[in-house]
Image (cartoon, rainbow, N blue to C red; front, side, top):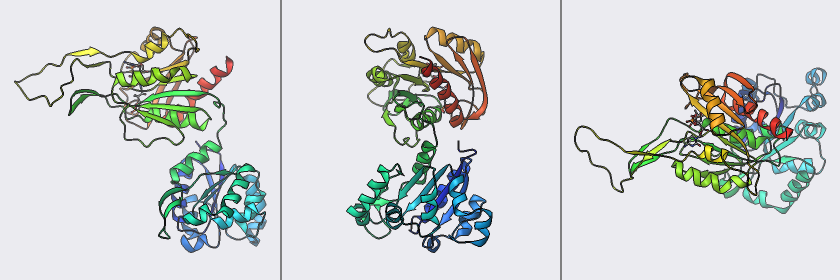
Length: 402
Ligand code: PMT
């Protein structure tokens, strides 16, 4: 995701400096080459050795360092960056940059870089709401600097309120978004994810092993590429993706209702959810008692949401670009082509869910993409994040053609 990206992580002096360690870990795990700059105050909270060990790069601390100036230099560091993150960013550093003061390595490098700069402020709640700070932030925003706002919570200074550093995962997501081309800007994409649950009684249900990982990866990826994302999700334990509107549902009938209520505003629908094909004929209002040695549950067919979308004739709103999934255990390509045609789709993502590293509840997938024009693309084994990127590459390319 961040392969071949050089990121400078500026760390200022604040108790939240320890969270920059977790952010560094996420960035390097994402494939970025991270170079850390620490202010003098930051070194009071965390040692450079921690950042050096985790980044596998020397930590930069001094503006005038004879060895570094010869070999790298602060201007060269600024020039080579794809992205600059300052986390935590203090009121002091933000104020200095807003005023054009460059009196240490961090402020000098931020001012010298042409790369996008993302500030993640953290400070006392009253400092944060102080009009002087707010004016500085507004000025930098107007100049194109990016901000990941702090969140509310109990602060190290004893106060309660806005000023807590955003979660490292949230800053990471903004960093990836800042480095991603916005080829889906202006598009609204509806994604379904997770399983449905079809209740038998208040304590039992019929469901499947979908974790929601595939659909959530698509939602995050679409958001990064500038789309407005509506995620209609069955029950999962995954965190809600930042910047995505999430609608939670339980059953297939509920999912159908929420999809149909929103489809008119969407350019693309991607159905990664594993929808139960059948539901119990009856839902008992009280727990079904154990009786006899066997039991029979009568099932009725659920609506096929995707087939319903494929059958839309457009009406006043044009039919969205439809991407279905096919979860197969055999005859992958044949079944995918059959579903593509029967449900009248533009594209189908067929995954062989009999493989241990593909399909349900794993972080990887193996997919065959099949298109309406008969072409196909075998994606092989990749992470669900990577597959989401590949699916959206095809969606963006085909939207651009029309
Ligand atoms: O959630 P994860 O753990 O990450 O797992 C990912 C996944 C395996 C669930 C995902 O990759 C996947 O394959 N999703 C589709 C699962 C499925 O229901 O496949 P299907 O072949 O039964 O259905 C075909 C298509 O019709 C799907 O897009 C499905 O959403 C849709 N459908 C199915 C039945 C129904 N009643 N309504 C539908 O809209």
